[in-house]
Length: 82
Image (cartoon, rainbow, N blue to C red; front, side, top):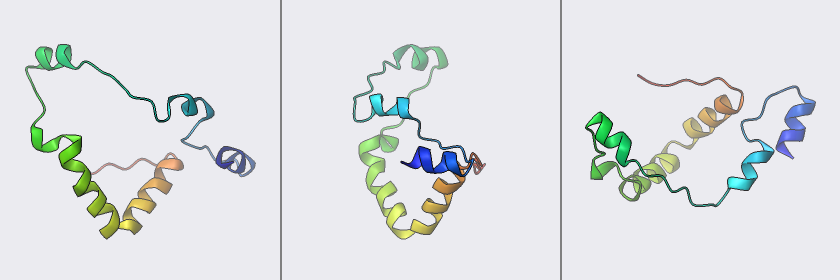
């Protein structure tokens, strides 16, 4: 629906139909080679289980910023903080 609506308005949509195939499927990735090559390993405090409560709190406390960022992303206007 979103793709069709944006198509009528000549706007590009981030989500594409081919992405539906990958929705709710596990992504198994072995990062061992990359970690060894870079001599780097992620810190545990930045693991998804530790960061998810922080992300949800930020979403709830700064909802307007999150929604504005998603709109910019959908419009292809990517802005990253240094």
